[in-house]
Image (cartoon, rainbow, N blue to C red):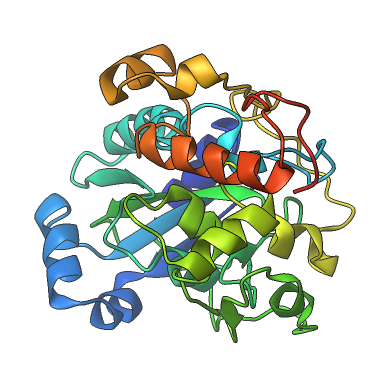
Length: 293
């Protein structure tokens, strides 16, 4: 199986991955909930290994704006699955007795921990994976397989622990690698429904329509990155007009189909834009000149 593992790495690299690795299912499965194990084994009976690949979307030196860098390009679920599917097909052709099941973001696996176990990167105190050439600016994709490939990872390693991300978080959401979604600016910009007054104030102060990059921008391990962002993710800041935000969900999704910020519909963006206008104290459109992330 050494040859299949080497070919896996070649194919994942050709698909755009800046790092990849393989974890042992015997380590992973007991650390998952019963429901999550059931989902994984239903799609991949006899699961033995989990291949992980990290795909770069930014370097962190892109212009600041009101959209997080991850949300400026194509919906990463689509893009990563499009890149992983041919790899899975090629590996199944090479190893006909095995299955290789692709996953992108919505997997049952504890993705950041699984990727760290694969040896793809280190665990950051901001809850993100830190890769050597792309830092935390990566999307994670997985191939679950029943093939007994050699495992490449080992003990999980953590970042240097400087604490800058915890101190820079505008909502104080970070504590030792755990993220409180009720205080995380990125999570709150995507949340549907009512927010508390404290959460609304955080959105006003945060200045973001969608997402937040502060814990990544301050990270020392995100400096001097060399991996080139994949083209479908390396796009300019989206501009939304008041007319766009006035659309119904169906029309909004149709107009911006395939973009990473549409999955929650228009309502959160409409609310966020209204809060930012209140903070600006003037009648501005959502497409005014972006300011600091």
